[in-house]
Amino acid sequence: MGKILRWGGACVVGLTLVASSAAADPLQIRVGWATTPTHVQPLVDALQKAHPEVFKHFGQSYVAQGLRFDGSTPQIQALAINELEVAAFGPSAVALAVNNAHLDMRVVGDVFQDGKPGFTTVRYVVKADGPIQKVEDLKGRTVGSNALGSFGDSTMRVMLHKHGLTDKDFTTVQVNFANMPPMLMEGKVDLINLVPQYNDYLTSGKVRQLFTGADAQGVSQAQVWAMRADFITAHRPALVDFFEDHIRALRWFLDPTHHDDAVGIAQGVTKMHREDVEYVFTGNDSYRSPDGVPDVKATQAAIDHDLELGVIPKGLTIAPSHIDLSMAQAAKARVDGK
Image 1 (cartoon, rainbow, N blue to C red):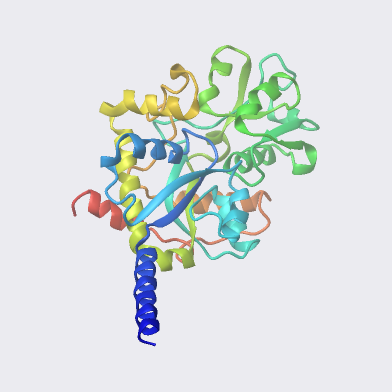
Image 2 (image 1 turned 60 degrees about the vertical axis):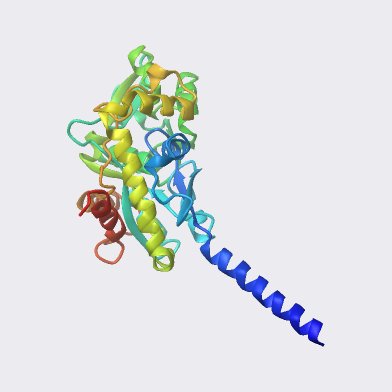
């Protein structure tokens, strides 16, 4: 009996140690992204390996890893089944996640903004020698979209709706960004969203710009980070640590003295020629808030605009119920030493 009691006691101690170890494990954070280097998470993943000194909390309170999706809307399902913690959403996807998927979402951070003065805007292009001369010419044609409800998709639809074309007036083919230029050249689609790393198509004269994101919506909050409210409540301290490291990493990339290294990281991640990614973190790139804070007013304006033009079926007032910038703000204060 004494041996049994001693064995049982040892088991309790062992189980306690295992439980304590499990409780101390860093929080696992999966971060959604669709195209890089515009979405910086894959670059941040690479920076963490190359310069771990930039990250004060990685591996201690949390670990993070980018997870690729075709666009915003596929991330809604991933959030719903707990296969994603941080989604990169276009504004309309926030409304869809709340209204259609019934998720209690919070906009928590900035991914990138479009049309900001001094920075680039997304370009929608057609074949240079093709028949499309104006937006109205797209009636009865086929357009390429990375994902229905994404920023690129909704911005395109806003512009087409402005010119009198409804969704019934054109056919949408879903295709990833890398395959868009070849499909345009092959005549399989008539309009694409040309992301900056494929600007050689524009400079070579193969394609012609028909309109831009700024033409459609002016300055807009193209992508935000969004999280489920219950996840934030359960893990706020670790998430502040995550945001602190993210802001440090973002500012490292934005520092002009690191530009050559940043281009090298972008080249390594994208596997593209160096000259194709030289634009990163310059005025020829999208604007990213160095504080990780989105433009809430522009986010709301984009949702309202999409609703007005029928791009989404139901609107959403994001402030105050669906906004939580406290983690990014607390992290910024740490980084700034306040």
